[in-house]
Image (tube, rainbow, N blue to C red; front, side):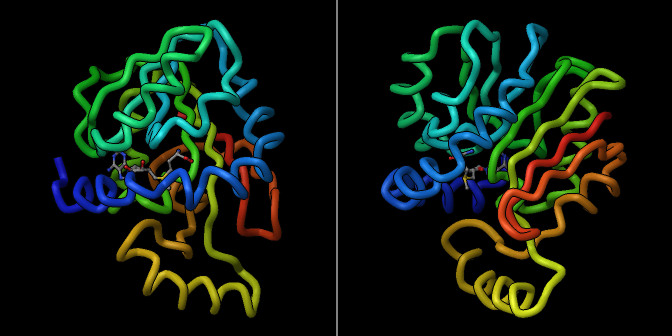
Length: 201
Ligand SMILES: C[S@@+](CC[C@H](N)C(=O)[O-])C[C@H]1O[C@@H](n2cnc3c(N)ncnc32)[C@H](O)[C@@H]1O
């Protein structure tokens, strides 16, 4: 496990709900609800559960393995996962080092994660390994922008934001392609910065 990354997110867990829980979650709720409604009845991996802010948007009755590198995040998530009307098994796991055999899952879902995972292409390749061939990856992500002045602003913000939390300027669509995924659909939610990405392994 990458202990530097774990320590950063353990620290961020203290105030995470104050920073992310109110504004962003209310604003993106309909988008996340629509994205997570794609959860089927097969084996589902949810990467980067964080404090569980995404859980209220999951459809009921699913069987989900939820992972995060930070056990401090997962401690906070338990209140929300316990309230879920279905099964969520939590494990403190680094995406770069998952203990699951190849093809363990039919679908992977994640939200605001590939701004944070230190080696995004390697992390995405690791997800491809644990998916069945043709398995689905669905992401809600914020990324860098192609357009001035947003690209420049997000590059400058990253210098500071990465010390405490995420990078603001990643190109997650390209990273998914480099990792070997076939990107099926990209939906822009806010400018070309906040988006959903659906891909197959
Ligand atoms: C910005 S938070 C998003 C949390 C949650 N999905 C949400 O939207 O509220 C990023 C999360 O990624 C997790 N994370 C960062 N690097 C990781 C890694 N290598 N493996 C697993 N989780 C990781 C952090 O611990 C943190 O909970």
